[in-house]
Length: 453
Image (cartoon, rainbow, N blue to C red; front, side, top):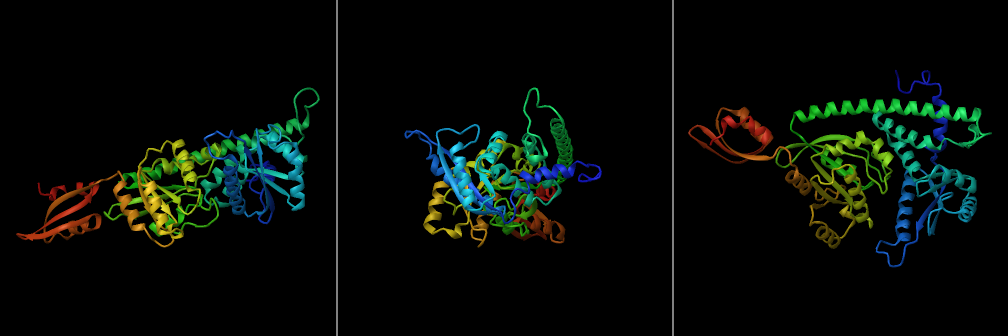
């Protein structure tokens, strides 16, 4: 049965119509938008960073997200409050200001840099007279645009439906706005419950399909593990240059773009390290500040590659002034995946945009806890050092040294040593070739019978 068979799911067009209102089609490719951020006041003696400054950086990131979705950002508003308004998030007075600002710029869509409750979403739309989406919806829109594999599309749709489900009540004219008590029951409520039931059924089917994909991925992973190849996962903040670095090392053709979340579907390629060992590299989805837990759960199958990796390559955009805060967010996500204790190599990418003094300062400030490699995926600088650091840090299939005695006519084993390891020294003695070689443990097992004690 086809997962997207309209004849077998006659209610699907209506569901997609609902989804278009708020999810994958929320941001049209030429749509003008207004960005709204909210910061909370903090006591003057508070040790934490200034909230307004943090929120301004967050608004700048929201602008990047909106532009990645194809929007034209017409303006930005930032409000500083003592506490969030549970009904409207920003307060009734601010809603009037947002309405006036949107009208003056002829903006049909307001994007809020905060996760909105269904009540806040409904009240903000009513108060501004504009369509309103929050940060999670914007991320879902970008994900829907960049998901090309079946697995990615299933995961995006699952996240969209889980987001849509609690927000069905009062969705425009096609559904009655319902409450509780006498006088509120009727056909509208029956239709609403019908839609909810259909969405839950769809969610269940998608979850089953994702479990099938996970099972298939696990089968492929077991097949890979039959050959002792370590997995190296590239992780980092979105737009840190992971895909460009991945392409430079593996000669792959993964999409690279300055847009956020340009790479959504995981790609796996094999590379050979300086020791002649082969490892598998995986390019994963970029992380983001306050990534919604629902998205992490929906993309569990993709993030399993991170959890199965023997080594993590943490890629940082060293040219970004906020790279320290971005690194902290990446570590939070790694901790949520229970891989924060995994061996890591830290790559300070995009050093071609920095001076030598800045690169030296970064190396000294970051080099205490883990291996740090300044590099540029664009120019190739530092890539050889990166491969050497990966070679040193990969914990699987360690290198061993062997002293081998081969007949001069034994070209097969000699070729095997050259292909899978490194010859450190060789000499001919009594018609035999004596080799001092360094090989992966897995390759050395097959040559033990030729080793000298």
